[in-house]
Image (cartoon, rainbow, N blue to C red; front, side):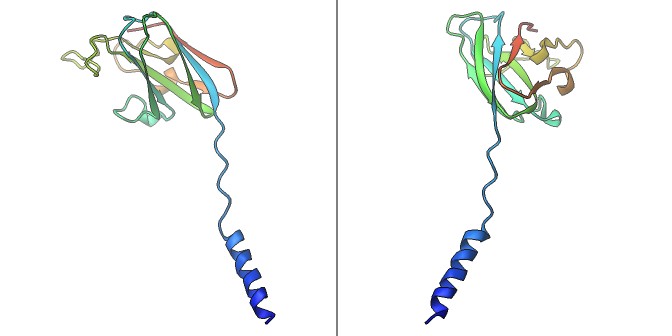
Amino acid sequence: MKTLPLAALVLSGFSLGAAPPPPPAKATETVTVVVSALASTQSVVKLNFYNAADKFLQKDQQAFRVVVKPEGKTEISVPVELTPGEWAVALTQDTNNNDKLDKNFLGIPTEPYAFSNNVRPRFAAPKFEECKFMVSGPGKVVTITSWN
């Protein structure tokens, strides 16, 4: 009779200790992206966030996307939650509202586009290293004023 309670105690100990605790959730910081000098006060702005150099500007490889309609304003302020580390943001504004970034025959965008750090590429797409910013604490503000 004493073996049954001991067996139950041993088995319950295994079930409690068998599964490791879940990993702690990654802390995030609020980063505010301020975008000004919009080409249109009505056309959506797409903000594509990247946290890996090998995925930067690759089709559908962004960490996430935020789509904002300016609602008649020439400046928008977008708060986002980012994990600490290196990030870059690439923006486009769909001025003709066809839900795509229009390009010319050379593949160069014909609609406004911009990057974090106000990088203005001349002959090739910018690199992650040029556009990256560091998230390491609260209150980070990324200001984008230069459009191509």
